[in-house]
Amino acid sequence: MKQAFKAVQISEHVYWVGAIDFSLREFHGYATQRGTTYNAYLVVGEKVTLIDTVKAPYKGEMLARISSVTEPDNIDVIISNHSEMDHSGCLAEVIDLVQPESVLASAKGVEALREHFGLDCVEALADGESLGVGDLTLSFYETRMLHWPDSMFTYLHADGILFSQDGFGMHLASFERFADELDPPILEYEAAKYYANILLPYSNLVSKTLERVSQSGLDIRMVAPDHGPIWRKDIPKVLDWYAKWADQKPTCKALVVYDTMWHSTELMAKAIGEGVSAGGARALLLPLAGSHRSDVATQLLDAGALVVGSPTMNNNIFPTLSDVLTYIKGLRPKNLIGAAFGSYGWGGEANKQLLAVLEEMKVQLVGEAIKAKYVPDEAALGQCYELGLQIAAKLKEVVGNS
Image (cartoon, rainbow, N blue to C red; front, top):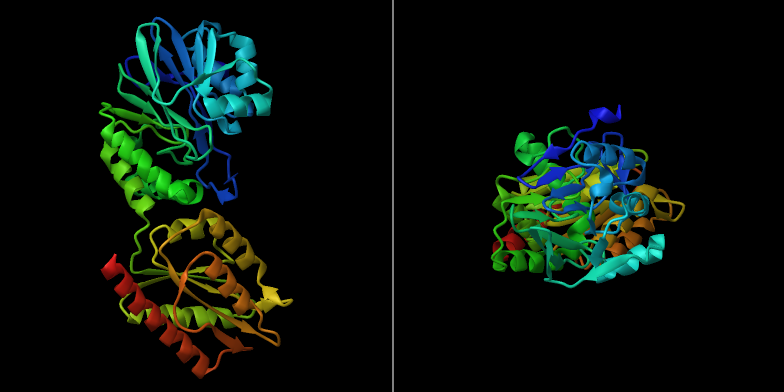
């Protein structure tokens, strides 16, 4: 079977030697219905350089692909762009096998690899440093907190390739190696989902990195991330996506996220959605009985309003709302307006708790929180509809001023 794993040449000097994981369905709390790839790259010149490795169970697949180009012990240099275990899980074993002349990482990468794996052989690269590897030149750029402290980009001058570790990637398993070989809507959705669930908290750093890349004068002809397909065409498109997502400019879209026990909160959500739509904005309802927290985060990426609804259960918000709000709060979305609503039988504490979380998230509240006892009557549903109208009006005002 190992003979079936072949390297894929992506440029004059570079081969993709990674692994494809069709079975992955969860990564850091978000659903990865399309699996993923762990991309590693072999740079072949007078010396041989391996950029990143793969998740530990896929070491054999990576080594088989390397062997289709050259014997693994011909590797002279190993570069770790990112020390997270899906890229470094088999690094220590590969070092033992290969015995390279040098193993290189950012200064923070040296610390992380030593503390995580006990590796004392890793040498630090300075931000902006260039290094000759045989007849080829590599340059290194720290991208701290995109999305770990150790993260960095590596640039191969001869082929114009930016090895961008977790930047510009996505969780998408396929035998196609290049983005232009894949369905564009799927490509954009998975790129957005990855950004929303991994990189959103660091959007200010994304903007600074994009500015640095644009001012660097680098001739970027290919972007090779550590997950998903490689960008060899339409590179400005993915850069523009990142710039847009990093700005977090609100749109006239209200995301109504709720759960329900006996359909009362659901009725309220629908009435709010009707009001938002009638007010000239777009309403998207996400019932948590069928929506994953990562889908909520993805839809929130281009929303201007977050409206949350929960029944009260045991004096608390419903567990699915607690899960989603904890998750979203950690992603630190900005520039949102919002509101809360819910139904109850006797206590009705959920609304107060929902509002507290929205305030923690610095969501600008619109209207009064609406609370309906048992089944909402016409008056309560009318209040929900009016709240939807208020949200739409506020969205149009905010978007018009942004």
